[in-house]
Amino acid sequence: MDGAGMYREGTLEWWKHVVDVDVLEGIVENFAVSNNYAAILTTPEGIPVTKPCNFSNFCKIVRSIDGGEVCRKSDAEGGRKAITSGGVKIYRCHAGLIDMAVPIMLSEDKTVGILLMGQVKLREYTRKEVQELADQFWHFDQREKERLIDNFLKIPVVDEEQLRRSAMLLKLVASHIVTICEKHLSERRFLEKGIAIMKRKVNKEALERNLKQAQVRSLQNKLNPHFIFNTLNVISRLAMFEGAKQTQELTIKFAEYLRYVLGKQKRGNFVRLKDELDCIRCFLDIYRSRFGERLSYEIDAEPESLGVFVPFMLLQPVVENAVVHGVEPSVRPACVTVKSCIKGDYLCLTVKDDGVGCDTETLKKGIGLSNLEEKVRLYFRERGCIDFKSTPGEGTEVQIVIPLVREEER
Image 1 (cartoon, rainbow, N blue to C red):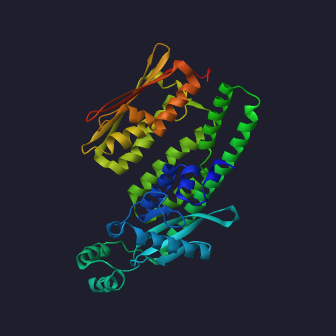
Image 2: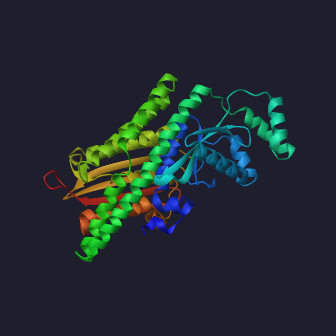
Image 3: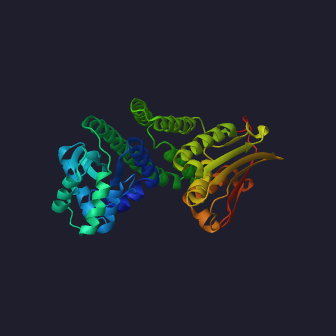
C-alpha cells in the first residue's frame, strides 16, 4: 500500500498527503484572478482543500454568518450535479448567484474533489428583485439582509458567452489538477518500490542521497508544460481582447518565469547565477503586481559572480519567504534586497528584507527553508552553510555561502 492509501480518497487528509496544497492554491488563485471570478477546490463533501480565492464580499458575509455550513452544502450539491453530468455544471447557488463546478476524477472514475468557480450574475437586478430573493431564500435577520442586498448589487455581471469560455478554461484547470494527482501517486509508488530494492544493495548514506535526488526530480516533473503554456496563452489572448493590459502583462511575466523553471530543470542541477537572478526578477515583478508600492526590490550582484554556477532554484524559496513572511504582513512599504559576491573560493549570497521580522527558529522550520538546507548539504556537505538572522520589526536576513562552482566542475 502506498502512503496515500492510509487515507480515504478525496478526504482533506488525502489531499494534503498526495499533493502540495500551496501549489494547488497558486494554480487556483492565478486562474481566478486572471478571469475575475471566485474559485475554490473542495472535497466531494464541500470541505475546502484550498483557501477561498477572490471571493466577493457578499459570499464572505454569507459564509461568516453560519460558519459556511450552508455554502459547503451548496458546493457539495453543485459537485454532485457536475459528477452526474460528467463535465462542467453551471448552476445557481442557494443564495442566487451563478456558479460552475467540475469534478476532479482520477482513473476508474473515482471523484476526489470539486473545482468551483463563479459568484457572478447574468444580469443586473433591481433592489426590489433582490429583496424578493432575500425574503424567499436568505434565512437571516433583516439587518443582515440589508447588508447582503447592498453587496449582492455590487457583484459583477457576465454574459453567457464569457461564462461559456470560462467553463472551458475551468475544465482545463481541472484536467491539470488530475494530472498532478495521478503523476504524484505513480511517482510515489515507483519511489517506494525503488526504496525496497535500494535498501538491499546500498548503505544508508548512499540511500538517503539517491532518495533525495529522486524527490527533487519528482517535484520538478510535476508540472505539465504544454498545458500550462497553452492555458497562459488563452488567458493572455482573452486579456488582450478584453483590453486588460495589466492582466496580459502579468500573464506574460508568469510565462517567462515558468519557461525558466520548466526549461532549466531538464538541463541538470546547476545553473548560472545570472540566470537564477533573472528568474528572481521575474518572480518579484509578479509579486509587485499584487502588492504595488508596498513592495520594492534591489538586486546587487558583483559582475564576477554572475558566471558562477549554483544549484537550480537555490534563491527562490528564500526570496519567497522574504515576501510572504516579511513584506506581506507589514503595514508599511518594504524592500527585498538580493546581493552576491565572491570571497576567496566561496560565493556569498544574501537575501534581506526590512519587513516585520520573525523568530529564527520558526523561520528555519518552514518547508521552503528546511528544503534549502537539505539541498545545500546534499551538494556541498560541510563546505556549504546558511545563516539566519531576524529582528522583530526590523526584518530578516538569510546568507548562503557555498564553494565556487565553475562550468567545468559542475
